[in-house]
Length: 215
Ligand code: DX5
Ligand code: ZN
View 1 (cartoon, rainbow, N blue to C red):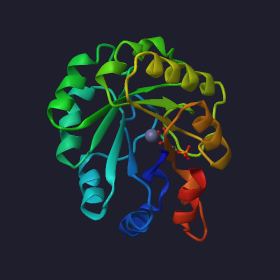
View 2: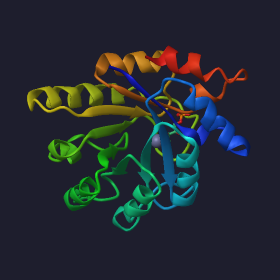
View 3: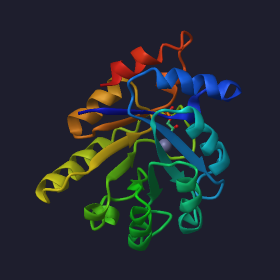
View 4: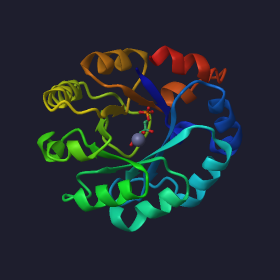
């Protein structure tokens, strides 16, 4: 089953509550929340206090994508604010096993994210401990970028590893996802699609159609 996670980063923040309520009316599975610290990526987004506000309006699971350093010092704050899953970058934490276990202890799903130029082998030894792998299909930091096609092979490689090991984890893709690139990712083995500008840059705010068109 293909799941969709609209990235709230692309919504109209002047009308955050209204945007979340429109997403509530769609049949997407998650709201993807991009957390950026200005160190791990050259941009800053929002933190745990805003996440709590999103939680108070949303009826969807909150899928939190940490693009931050010092993951160990911050993940609790996002869980306390209502995160249902925490995904952090292997480039930010080279030995992630303890953190993975600590997050799981708090009854929260955990994912490992990987940038376009990082080899899959960096995370492959950890996939048995996690719930999802997030394959970045753009350089993290900004919405609205072009999909990087070379990542399709990484998705296929990961899918093969998952089958080989008979494990059951999600493959999430994030960055430049639209109707066309979504199909290519699904064909390669992805099952969770994150999309920001494709969904929210819609003059009619017809998010229901946009989300359905991705599956
Ligand atoms: C980029 C973020 C993405 C971003 C996707 O660093 O991780 O989640 O919001 O935006 P689009 O879909 O516009 O590429
Ligand atoms: Zn993201």
